[in-house]
Length: 200
Image (cartoon, rainbow, N blue to C red; front, side, top):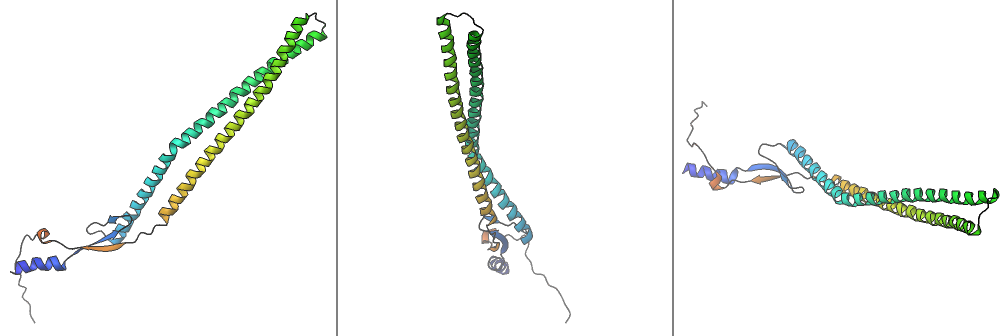
């Protein structure tokens, strides 16, 4: 009878007290003091923050990579167009110079050759103007790509700052929870009566 009453006493009066936090959800372990639990809770919170930051950066990674690739292609286009424009300018200068020099040197040229030479020079001049226009368009396109990339990086930084503020502003309230044992979880390996004699 006393053994049964002892089990009832344990079930009703003896509870395991643990530290806990509801958000983020974490519960202490047996014999863990408050300081150790708070340190573990803060570490857990940092891990949650780092995971959220990593997830956000991964979400932006593809968009940033695509924007960087677009900008690199636009800059390569500018370089190609600049090279082409320089080559056309040189060809035009040579053609005009040849025509003018021929006229000054008194070279006898038939009218057909002179017209063709002048025509080539004019076409080269026209191509130079078109090349400059194309190059300006490519520069404008690259500038737009650069602005898009900067805007995307700014957006990422803004979201990272918001995330940091969110995690740093979270309070970590620590409370205690009591877990009472169930009858089928109470096991005593030995039970007896101990008599301690004393002198009054």
